[in-house]
Image (cartoon, rainbow, N blue to C red; front, side, top):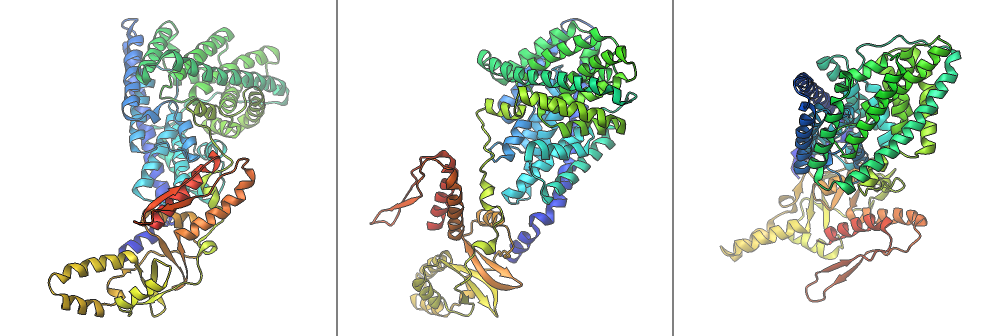
Length: 623
């Protein structure tokens, strides 16, 4: 390898570029969230203005906008359907789902068309997928190991949520609580930085998010029974909501087999017809949300709002429209909170309707997504009032426990199961390498060659050894790598030169030193390097071995075969969890040609992924 490649590799060490990547992801995710917000606001504002002219404008806009939104998803990125959070969760669990610039662009455009056309969903869920997709694209532009790519996706998701709500703390907590379940220093560091920058960019460019007008908040111990009642009510309706979303999605898929374009168009048209017959507040989700958060004194209006919004949200969800469940959950929770607040006001008269509405908002979202901590932090960051913390915590915890009893598990996980994706959290690929470093698997007795050796002597060394490559030393320092492929290339050049003069070719071959044909300045690793990073370097640069250097001295060498042995040992550790027998790889080779096949009998799907990876690595090693 050239010296430049070595320097590039050193610069590419994940911890050295984590800050830069987190800043870049946060910046772009914040800009994308602002673009999404402004696009939905512009299209939605135009829709509200023209809706007063004739009654069929809203259904028509819903039909056309829904069709165009679904068409983009059908043609360019089916991964952009729905809220996007299930897709991010699957990608973080090593399910092969695309998260790149194409997905981000389609998600932005399809969400603007769908929500701007009146479908009753929110934009904050899509910003999570957009942020993760941007992070996925950055990880392709600046290559890093699969382990650190996972942290970058999580940082992008955190930045997206932070930009959507102007709530950077909630962005980090959502990643930890729902998506990644990881509190390592690298995860927290990149997620916090990306989330902070995403939130700041969104705040600076688009101003306040949902926290435009906050009601007066009071809390006293006498209100605790009403808050407990609110928690139970929210938990039960959240469980009903989760079951309903799954049921209507299944029904829609079974009845309407027209692709996303047709299904979202129908949902948009139906939503438009319904909204035409409702008060003007229902034409703008943000306005409706603040209308409820301030506390609606008329319980009949509040109950009607809850019922209508519940149904409209199910219509949009059933078609897998590009849009999130955050805002619908907040609106439904605010409606329930207002109802209980009205009850308390008529009984005790010491609380404020706004306190109950805001508590219901956080509790309903936490019960639906099963993220109670994230939920009350979001509402706290929106209000920035410490008086809301206690009532919010009481209702959120009670609602979560109630919802978990009647509808266990995350809604996002259940939506993935509808797509045929069943997350296996017990065994994951990178888990095989947890705690392993280069020094744990490297060979400490290393055969080396001197840079002054002649090529003929090198050929004799290869003939005597079982190894297919050697580090080349000069003054006790590694200066290169010589492999059989280097010798093959040299011999091919030598054969061509025979056409000119056989005597000259023979003379040159006898006097050429190994330093002239070796790969100079090879990529090396330190003994402390994570094994996942070693795997990444071997795969990315298509190498078979890496010298291990400690303080400029060669202390070992690590090959694909060494990693295969380590993997086999780890698999034997997993075997106690496997009930069926699984067979290792064995090789079949033709006697005439020396070529052959690797046979891989399998009887347990749990180990299939690892054994296939071993077979591929063996094939690469043999070639």
